[in-house]
Image (cartoon, rainbow, N blue to C red; front, side, top):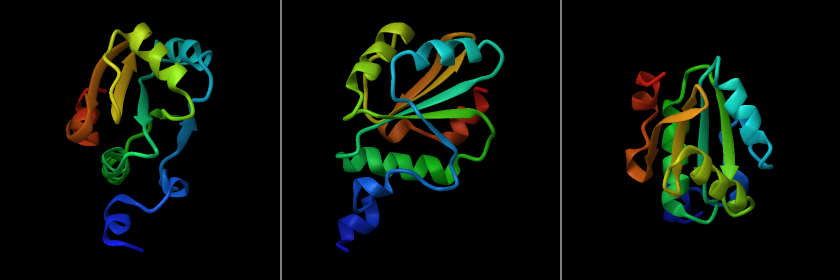
Length: 126
């Protein structure tokens, strides 16, 4: 394994941590479910590009810090760009990758991207 693989991960198969209970975001209709659910409970969406080392690094850092119990959706941008576009439209956010969004009351109340992604900061917004 190369030094870059050690730092950023070696393959798409390593894209998520087993300790994080990711819910795969794979179809646009799930956004309606997320909006409805967020009326009572906050929901996190993590948008990730499996080909981007920066995104992989941000994901690993997020997973190391993430220790609170909310539904957390994982969006593979390369597989589901249409969903990312719909997220941008529905929640009035600029598409970025990597990006984390907090949905409460049907609205995006917090989003961060790249090196600004911080699970500790996100937790303060719950």
